[in-house]
Length: 75
Image (cartoon, rainbow, N blue to C red):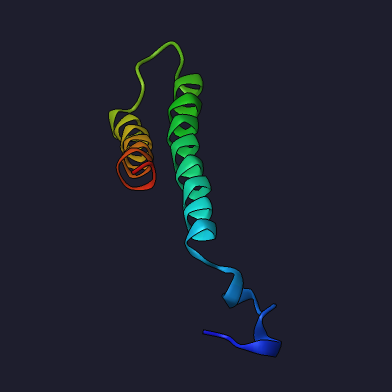
C-alpha cells in the first residue's frame, strides 16, 4: 500500500497481527467490565439480592467477550 518514505506511517504497521492483538485486549477489557459490574452490584447490595437487570448486563458483557475471543480470535 505505501511505498518508500511512507513505510513508517502508522497505517502501514497495522497488519492483521496487530489488529488481532488489539482485538484480543479489547475483548479482555469487555470481559473484565462484565465481571466488575457483577462484583460492584454484589458488594453494593450485599445482604439483599442483586438487581437482575444489572446481573444480566454483566453476564451479557462477559459472554460477549468470551464468545468473540473463543470463536473469532482463537481460530
